[in-house]
Image (cartoon, rainbow, N blue to C red):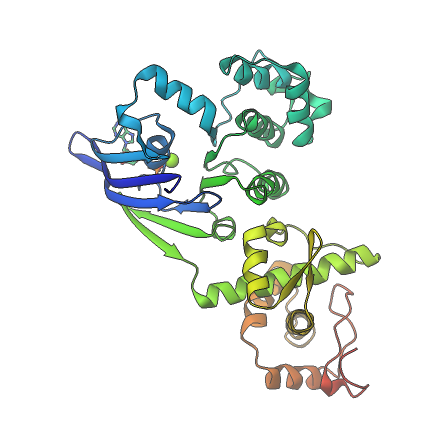
Length: 360
Ligand code: ADP
Ligand code: MG
């Protein structure tokens, strides 16, 4: 039995169909992203899954039990026991400290335990903020308190409605890191997001349009690009650990996303090494090639085409790296006289054309 089964669910508000005849299953351990324009029914869907609202038609079942058939008390218990909710607006009680806000959630579970609440805050990196009021901490920190609060009961289903919508890139990355950890530990996540970069962290993507749901798997091309990006992150992390190189700025924590890494293992790009993943020989070659293409493209844009806008260079290099053929890559390398480093000073892996014994 799937964790969640939705059967022909619809939600109407008078004449308005917020959700139309929606059916799907969600398996344990899946990460689903829900995307779609404003007003397309994303929050309505999350509310139905949470049991905060009931469909006007159809069923929403959690482990086989129809939420609409539960009494109010039973439903409240189900939400407390099984569901963790994170919203875009933080919904913290303004006159309670971070610790007290987390403990309030425990109180609802009738299990206030200060030690556990402190550990939950420590897990989201907020030990030092335990005694602060929401007004005294940043938006990113408030959202992390919400994540700590949502996770206090180890919910089997985590529902997040644009959890990074109000956060800057660095804070968003941190919050996504928390979700990634949960996912890797087997948690089931349904996350509404506008950001395609975040959307592709998921195994499956639900697209809502005018209340209609389209479930999509990653296309082969998306998957290949995703793998390339992960390989690049592998390479950059290794360089950063080797020291000396500036680290990549914001990258969503795909590198730590177990489901992506498992797909890459299945494709022979990675192998498991104890708890961690390492590049296979083929993966190593592919990583070197993608990094080489990316950095050569950067050189081309900056030195030959005299583009000075770093963001533009980066954005275009990110596209080009996926489409340059080996032959064209060699031509660019020759044309640029086999540059040793990209415009940021990071080494460009040598290619066969570089005449010094090929790849090192
Ligand atoms: P999204 O989260 O994708 O922006 P929502 O699920 O919040 O969209 O809303 C879907 C549609 O349902 C919108 O047209 C919205 O105005 C309408 N709607 C949502 N909640 C209510 C409500 N309580 N009463 C009436 N209409 C609502
Ligand atoms: Mg919404």
